[in-house]
Amino acid sequence: MLNAQAESRAMSGTYANDAARWHAFRGRDNAADGKFIVAVKTTGIYCRPVCPARPAKRENVEFFDTVGAARKVGYRACLRCKPDDISERERVAKLITRACRRIEHDETIPSVGTLAADAKLSEGRFHRLFKQATGLSPRQYALAKRVEAFRARLKSGETVTAALYDAGFNSSSRAYEASRRLGAKPSDVVRGGAALTIRVGVARSSLGFVGVGMSERGLCALTFGDSAKAAHDAVQAHFPKARLLDAGGALDKELKRVVALVEEPKDGIDLPLDIRGTAFQERVWQALRRIPVGGTKTYGEIAKAIGKPTAQRAVAQACGANPIAVAIPCHRVVAAHGALGGYGYGLKRKQALLKKEAAE
Ligand SMILES: [Zn+2]
Image (cartoon, rainbow, N blue to C red; front, side, top):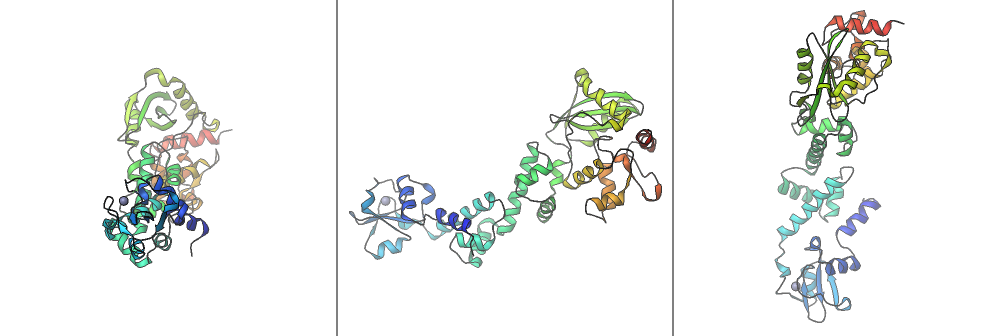
């Protein structure tokens, strides 16, 4: 069963009524070619809707679904537009192309049944023809197109979450399922920060040198190092493919704010964050940001909080991959049984941060 919306779309798409056909014929609508036949009563000739011959008057025109139907009542083919030449293959190619466009543009992936009804074919035949033409099943095609759109949006700088939704995935798990089937990970695109330009500055803090990376959208990296170079290199390590620009004094304001955050994490930071990770990493990082100042959570608790109770190791990895230390408080995640757990910038720094937060 088609729903009303799909039905009306199918109708307009197939030029189902004479008014739509006349409109398409008069406007030389290229998309109408092969969809119906125009016959002119005064000349006894039938044409393709895109015939370059002069359009006839409305009252002299009638429409047929097929060449055969026009011929049956005595019309002859126009020598100019050669309506009989629209071969079956052309017709099928058009139907499949139309199905492709619909798959790309519909908010939710249309079912094979809907697409087949749209093309006025049986499901089996539609599926076969679609696969012949594209090499993919309609569903594979839909997923491939959505992954493609997702990548394009990431490259244009959207966050993972926004890109997922805009590309027509209504959950990140769907995107992952799709990308897994297609043998490519959306994370491949994010990872490395390709096409990203980051302004970098380094400042001193009580915990050593702090590396600060600013993208156009905000703070995308906060690192530590025992030397200015180490802190700087740590920014690059998080975004190996990004172009790093030494900001000189241009980041003084941001550096001050970041150092203030490091010294007094409980005050928070007054800078927009540009959080860039895989969908999974971003879920973990959001969970970290919900740990209140002065509190800690175990890897297992974070795993549970994001609905992946068995993903403790992946959670730990996501914590380790966190590019914005302190602002995304991965230092608040500890091992079970009161052990401190690891920290990418050394346990001393983790301990010091927790101590600062606990003190009151
Ligand atoms: Zn013609």
